Image 1 (tube, rainbow, N blue to C red):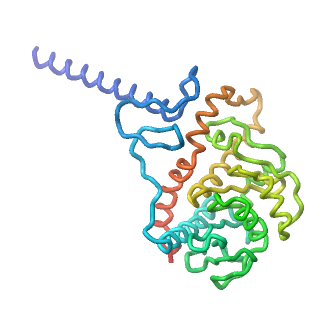
Image 2 (image 1 turned 60 degrees about the vertical axis):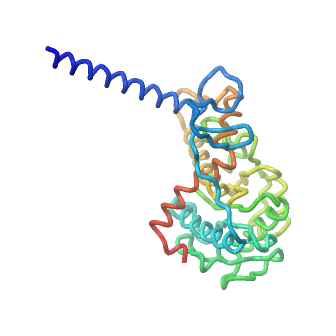
Image 3 (image 1 turned 180 degrees about the vertical axis):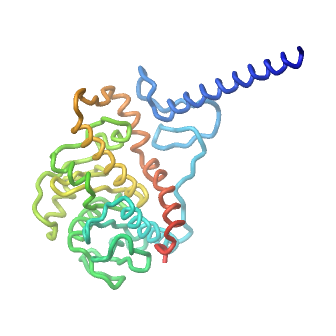
Length: 315
């Protein structure tokens, strides 16, 4: 009898522990997602006195998360940036963001910041590596590397890098859903938590002037971008920027997915989809998922996986 009571007691205790664990997990998800209703915009509350990470001024999340690296020399920083740039093209290839020779990602050089690294014109995203990247100066001259520069890449990206000293990297490609969404001539709406990353932080360029071979077209795009982190180029595609290459690439990936989601919503039948109506909730989500740290952090796993799967991109 005692033995049976002991087993029953243990089972009750285990059940209580499981229920407590489930409750804690659910609460943690609500805290991280910022979906608690009926509150004003404020930094996330924490479950305990555990370590926290600041993701934006005045905004912290639970956990001692990794931070962007620092470098002993500019040469080390350049090498790291080139590795991530090469890997990013491979990541774009995996996501299907390539369209023949179209598309480009640029990274400002840390030693000579008026120059930038970019993919050589004519190379497939899947064959880009550190060794075949090219470096271009402010006049469009290739000063390192053996491949020519895509004139459209220079026309657009040179104007952005010049207008925005805070922009370390810029990405533009002809991804399918970004292109399709661009024909609507509108900005992304806050239908989901992820799209809140671009709330009040992306622009629309609605004056397509043909293939951007001329600097005037690039300047017009830079002007439309303003101080935002991304732009929808009407009848053309998406453009994202970042204060790190990591951030820039992640913004492109998630923006493309947000475009896909909204396009799917437009194809709904029956009940109309609902946007997030609580502006405080949108602001809170934007401050977290749209922060520079979040952009940097989300890229890290993609980079590790790519280096593991395709180590030749670093050569």
